[in-house]
Amino acid sequence: MRPSANTAMRLASRRTLFPATPLPPAPTKTTTFLSLRHIHHTPAAPATVSPVLGNGPPPEPPSSAADSSAQRLARRKKQAELLRQAADIRKSQQQSSKKKQPGQEDRPKPRRFWKDVSVQEVDGALEVHLDQRPLRHPTTKQIVRLPLTKPMLASALALEWDLLTSVQQATRQHLIPLTSLVCRAVDIAEDDEATHAKGAAHESLRAGIAKTVLRYLDTDTLLCFAPPPASYDVVEDKESLRETQERVFKDVVGFLTSRVWPGVAIEPVLDGESLMPKSHSAETRAVVEGWVMGLSAWELAGLERGVLAGKGLLGAVRLVVEWSEGPAGLGHADANNKKFGVEEAAQAASLEVDWQISNWGEVEDTHDVEKEDLRRQLGSVVLLVSGTGKQ
Image (cartoon, rainbow, N blue to C red):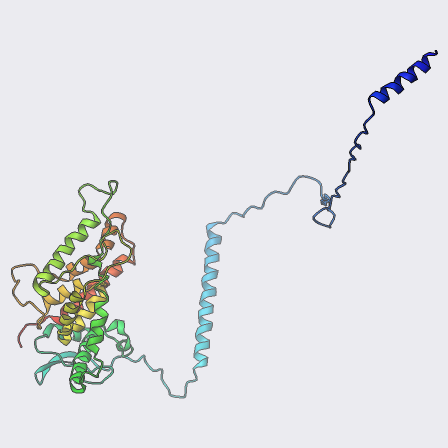
């Protein structure tokens, strides 16, 4: 048998014994083509190189010409001449705008109509006279009359008007602060009379002032303490801000709770840890409000000025109490002790500012101006409420 036939027979027998199993279909490979697309549609433009228009080295930098002293002097003379010519032109324009009638003379600036200022006693009261005219209230036109026990207030009021140089200055409130304060006291006294005549239905000026000053009780600067100093804040041989506040608090509040409002508890409203001040009790507010409502017209006007100037009630109360000749004053009970004066009240009202100034220095035209203005206003309070004490 030929070899090819034997091979074919062997293959046939193997197929019979081991039948062939169909092969799984070959996996087909799918090729996905991603199309790349630019975000923008504008083709990129190549940079345009500026052509070189010139050849050679760059020019020298500009230099200022030498200026001699003679040239500077000539330039300044020319500038001065131009300024003088401009001033002459403005002056001629102003003169031409004013049509002057033949024989008409230039009117001088209006000056004050009085020559002398004096204090006179009229019908049991003190009056400030401008020549022969008595000083009047700017609104009600009533004659301003002061008690006979206030000669220093009358003299200060007369000096204020003697320093004025024109009638226009008399209409400016910042030039007549003492006059405004006296008129405020006169208004309170007249409103008290109107309230007694009309009864409780009339909203009194006194009640409005009491409501205003009581707002400063819960935010008084003497009742707001700084946090205790840390270890790195302690300065040798110097009192910390917290210690300064505690010392002044004990002095002022201790005096008020023992002499003015006995038994009333006044505590700090900010102790360095809280953000919002706490309010006083209703009993404390009622006692303070009743005391304010019982003040005389002069004392109430002085208290209002002191509270608004020092941004606090307690310091103003002690200043009024120690200097008043009225019912709220202590009289000569503490003649041997040093009085709580303008300087002490000003220092109590500006504790933190003074402490910061001692550390970092004073800002000119700011701290010094506020310092003097505070003492001026507190001094007017002392003038208003004090007197000889003779009724």
